[in-house]
Image (cartoon, rainbow, N blue to C red):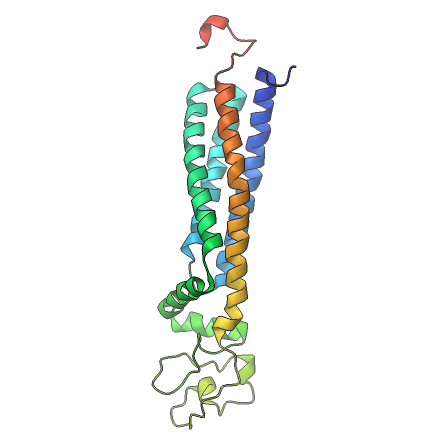
Amino acid sequence: MVCGGFSCSKNALVALNVLYIIVAFILIGVAAYGKAVAVVTSLALVGSIITCGVVLLFIAIIGLIGAVKHHQVMLFFYMIILFLLFLLQFALACACLAVNEDQQRNIVERGWNMSPNSMIAQVQTKLDCCGFQEIPKPGLSFVPCSESECCQGNMNTYCCSGNTSLPWTGTCDCANCWDELKPKINKAFKATGGVGLFFSFTEIIGVWLAMRYRNQKDPRANPSAFL
């Protein structure tokens, strides 16, 4: 077998699509972790990377079948869709890496404001924090953080109880939730964007290899039955 011949191209494309299946699960796993640590926001960019991972999984299966059978139609659509997926995944990965701290805070704050009180209370308890960024005070809509560890034994603080009859001192023993969420959100964006960007370039290799393999003749086939 000469490298660059039909058999070599076939085996390389099969191996590459097996790799894509693994990569798809990695993308889905990393992006799903990003959504999980975000807690209160859907993080649309991260969710889009999950979608890319799912699409890549199906495309890899199509490419695997097309490579084994040397199926011209399947290989053609495989090349087209894989190239479009590369463009989308590359753009989304760059967007994830380019999001700065202020943009991250705005995204999370919108998610926080849209979340039900039960979810906010759960986040405050889990992260041991109170309020998104401001110290809870009278007249400011907030969810009391009475279940947070920082409030235990100190329920005479307004931010913990939400009791409007208590005097407001302007202080709170609990940290705000943005300070607790910030490193997790940043890690989610960077991890998702980095993994997505790295693996997007392998998809160009897949397009080139499929194009090359599609235009090669199977030496075992009837010469007049191809191309």
